Length: 148
Image (cartoon, rainbow, N blue to C red):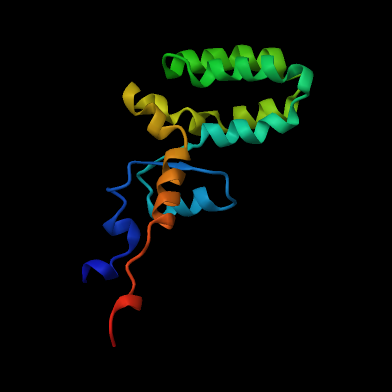
C-alpha cells in the first residue's frame, strides 16, 4: 500500500501527540478517531471567553480572578485543588458555568502534563490561529504570472 493510501490512524496517529481544540461540534470525536493515541487539550482562552458573557458585571472581576488561579497554578494537582475552591465559591451563583468547567476540566488542564515552558503553546489555540491567519495573508504563488 502506498503512503498516501494508508488509513490516517495507521500512518499518522503516532505523529500527533497533543492537539488544542476549540469547541466545535463533533471535532473532538473526529480527532480522536483519526489520532486515537493523541491527547486532547481544549483551549482555555476560548473557554474563558465563552464563560465571561454569562457572569454578572458585579461578579466578573472576582470570578475571573478566581478562575485564573486554576489555569495559572504551579501544577495540575494544585490546579485541581484550586478548582475545588472555585467550585465551592461559585457553583450556587453560576451552576451551569461551573458545571461546564468541571465537565471539561481534564481536557482544559492537559497542558500540566508537559514541561512548563510549553504550557503557553499548548493551553490555547491563539498561537495556532495566528499562524493560520498569517498563512492566509501570505501571497500564494500562482500561475497568474506565468506566460502561457
